[in-house]
Structures are given as C-alpha cells and as structure tokens.
Length: 353
Image 1 (cartoon, helix red, strand yellow):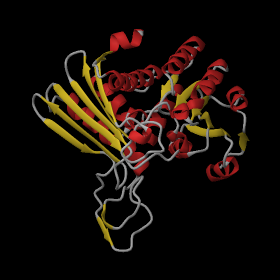
Image 2: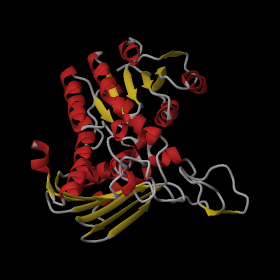
Image 3: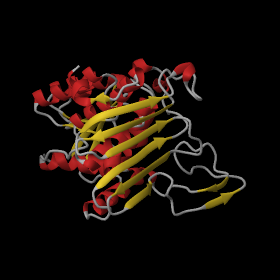
Image 4: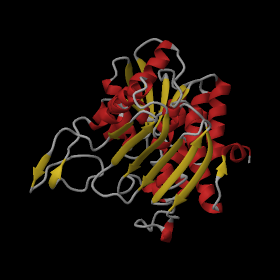
C-alpha cells in the first residue's frame, strides 16, 4: 500500500488520544479524518486534522481513508467494524474487542468475508520492555515456562461506560485484565484448555466500587494445552497509580517485570508535581515518574507495526489479530462462568456451547 497510509479514527476519548499520538510518531502514517460526537473540534485542533464528521459510516466510506481505527466505547465496536469491513477498509480495533462473544465472532467473520485485516490493538504485545522479555525467554534463559503471573490494576476506569455491563461487557478482569490475558497467551503460544475464575461479584458485592455493575476485582487461572499455568488479575481497588507487573517461572530460571512503575527516576516531594504515572492521585512523597509512558506501554510501536502490515501487505502476528481478541474474551467469560458455577471450565465445551 502506498505511504503515507491514511487513518481515520472513530472516537475522541482517552484511547483515541493514544492512537493519535502514536500516528503522529509514525513516519508512514497520517491521521486523515476523525469521527466523534463529544469534543470533536477540540480533538481535531489538537492533532491538526481538518476533516471531521459525526457519522462513522461516512468516515468508513471515505476514499481517502485507508484504515479505520476504532476507539469508541466497546459496545459500539461491532457496528463500526461492520461498516469498515463492508467498505473494504482494514481495521485496527481497541480492546476489548466487543462486549459480547457473539459480537466478537461476528466481527472476525465480517472482516474475513470482506478480505480485510482486523487487527487487535493490544499494546502489551508491543511494549519494548515486554519485547525484551520475549527475547530473553526465547533464548532459553528461564527454560521451559511453567507458570506466568500477570496483572493490570488501578483505582478505576477513565470511562463512565465502564460502570454498566451493557456498555462494557464485564468488570475489571474483562476490561483491563484483557491485557495480561492476551499477552500471556501470546507469550506461551499455545491454546488455553481450562479456566477457573473468582471475582468480587459486582455491584453491592464489590470491594470498593459499589456503583460498578461488573466486578472491581477478579482473577483467572488458566491451563495451557501443554500444562503451563497462567494467573491473571484485573482490579479497580489498587491505589497509587496503574500497576502492571509480570512474573515468569521456568525450569531453569525466573523473570520479574515492573511494566508501569519501573521508572529509573525517583522523586521525593512535599508539594507534588503535575504527573507521575496513569491513575496516580497525587505526586507526594517518593514517586517514580514515567519517562515516556505511552512508549513504555507500547502504543507507538503498536501503530508502527500495524502500519507496516498494511504497507507491506503482511499478516499480523499471533496476539494482535481479531481472533486473538476473541480468544482473550473467551478466557475472561469462561472465568465468569466458573465463578457462577463453581466449576473448572473446559474451553472446548465452552466454545461450543
């Protein structure tokens, strides 16, 4: 495909900001058009975009848009992906892929039927820190992987939509636990065969956020087909800023990662300063401010990779395809089924039910 590859973003919220920033850093990409309802003019002025609309179908059909980036609330993902696929446009879709499994499956099928790429925007798969981890593991430094423990936790979502299951599909395990779920599956490179889940229950059963219909704390323990174990946590009860960590245990070694709070800068302040890390509610006392948080979490590298797939007409790797977003959803929803029934869920049976 001829460069620059022209992108159209649907959405003007937090995720759209991340993608607009990543596009601005990508030499072979251009943000051509934006669709939004709230703050559309402000967003376009911030990122120097002249062309704008409040109709996503108009953006999808526009001949000057090569790829549609879906940054809407999750419950709107399916219709936007369907419109983009119908228009023959390649697609980058934010996480989680959808709010319902039937919607995610329909999105994957629609892209395949239209012959377009549906790429799943999982930034963990592009974090320079985690890419280095993958290299070390691939060298055999920890031997065969036996167990991976990973989490994304913080004090609550940016979005009001995250409070209603109709709009978000699930609670913390689904909405932010999707990052470690997908990355652990990407790292192991095998399919999950069994899942056990435990959550805070949602609503009045939650630990802190009684106004969230979904759980504010959840874990999923899953078994891969060759016997390795994965344990993933997502919660909205953690104070002090977003905490993303990974631990890997193998037959010949171990590896531990502080993805979001591993800055080399240590600051002590009695009066505070503007920003340290995402979700931190103050910058008092000892803090570890991020240097380039978006780079560290993988957003610029993610867009560079996806644009490269379009430029060179190559297929995206395992972990960032539409079907990988679907597989991650299946694991999270299997964990919910385990919580409801008190049983270990066999994925073969769960997928066919």
